[in-house]
Length: 292
Image (cartoon, rainbow, N blue to C red; front, side):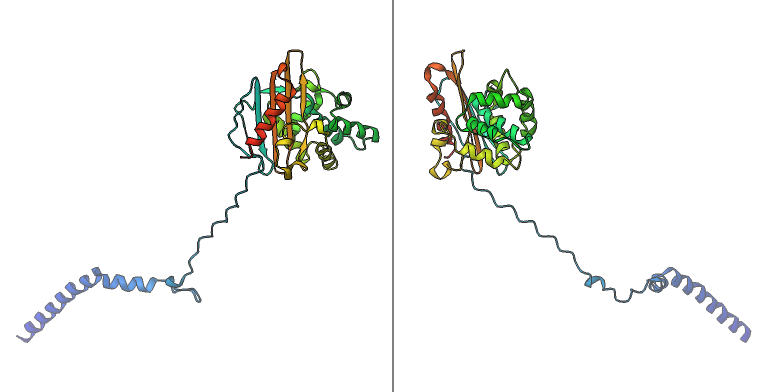
């Protein structure tokens, strides 16, 4: 009897073990203990996750202040004139240009090219003679044609116009027949003026000399742009105009001026019967409207 009771108790205990142990093994109690034991200890001195520093976004760079308009700046221009006229104004601070719809159309430069002829010669000549400097001065201040032909030859004739396009970044202009017949657009004339003004044309040694000559042209050479400028701007403006009445019965009157922060070029072609002042007045009209 006692043996049976003991055997029964043994069977009951064995059954309990077979039921309880698998339950514990399949539960998350043991797996949680294993996970806790396997977790790596934090490194000494490492901040807790909640204490980790956060990276702040870099502040936006300050925007550049807007430049005030140049003395001559883009504006609506209207001219009631017979024949052809075009213009381009260039901001010397930014290089930005604006102009008429036909600003890429080429016309003869006439004497306007003389500022380039002087610059091209001086950049390429180590020590110009006093005689040549006097002729250069006469060519710019008084628009001497004989001096222009002389330096045109010294510069290699058409080679000088090739250098003009390369050095000054012209896109429309080209050599044609002689120095006075060089074909240039209004936008290329403005680029040429900027090139003279910033030193690419004559080089660092002679740029100031060329600009000083252009600021001191004779009174007969200052027509067009300069008379229409504010008084404070006139003395610092360098100018080289061009004009010629050709056998085709047309005047070619062109104006180019280099100011403190601008360059303006105006090209005109119209019947010769209207006289030279007709073209000069177109240059003045464009200048006044670009100050508005």
